[in-house]
Length: 351
Image 1 (cartoon, rainbow, N blue to C red):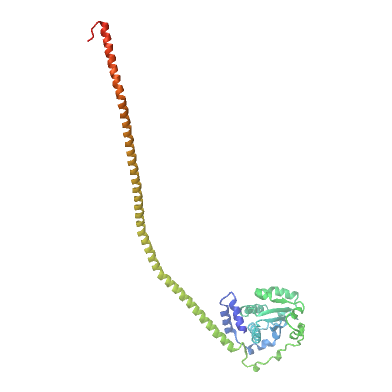
Image 2: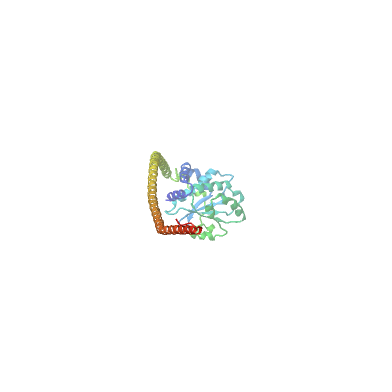
């Protein structure tokens, strides 16, 4: 159950390859055999004891037993991972986190193991994300605050937020009932760790955490996941190839369609131009016909006006002709009378 939850959490992290890296890490570092970490476990640096009200296992870390000058870093790391895997194996369904109690009683500067803390922080962040419920550190003073100001930056922000320095025993009551708390933390459990009470490796021959069957299952799962990733990559490559082929196939067809479209356009444009020219010519002819008709009408009207004017002039001449004749006759008579008068005066007889 926990492994499923762990893989789900790893898969939700920003790094897509983290789950695969974790499976590779498990294949490389697990299982851990009891006999190889037995001597380190006997020191009592870390051990399991009790549960929270919700069923989370409690891991006690005893800082005063750290021995940076004598310990082997790899063995120390494998021993605490052994404890973590032991907690995981015994967690009830739905439980995926553990409460850590960091016991600093009688801690001295000689117990400071910065190399171990840095390495452990990295291993837990990479391979056991969201496994920590809360880390209660008790007691805390000036020396701890100075050390924590340096050590806290080795942890990711979420882990830092889960670390709670405790000046008294009150925070312990928020997580555990008295029967699940050691007496040194204000409970009623008088358990005292004794490394010699641990089972001998000969009593647990071949015992390891996690079981080999689980490791084989992870290996098989890793292979299946790798095969699935390869299939997905091949499928993506196939889709890309298909898309490229389709694009390559459609490109000549598209070019052909474009050429045909250009040819149709080239053929249609002259026809449209001819039609437009014919229409314009027809309109011009119609306009020309109208103009000629109007000119003919105007010419006929002008001719009629000229004829009317000529007729009027002729009529006036006819009317003025008798008067002119009478005037001429009167003038002749007047001339004759004047002649006769001149002859009389001169004594000539009239002819």
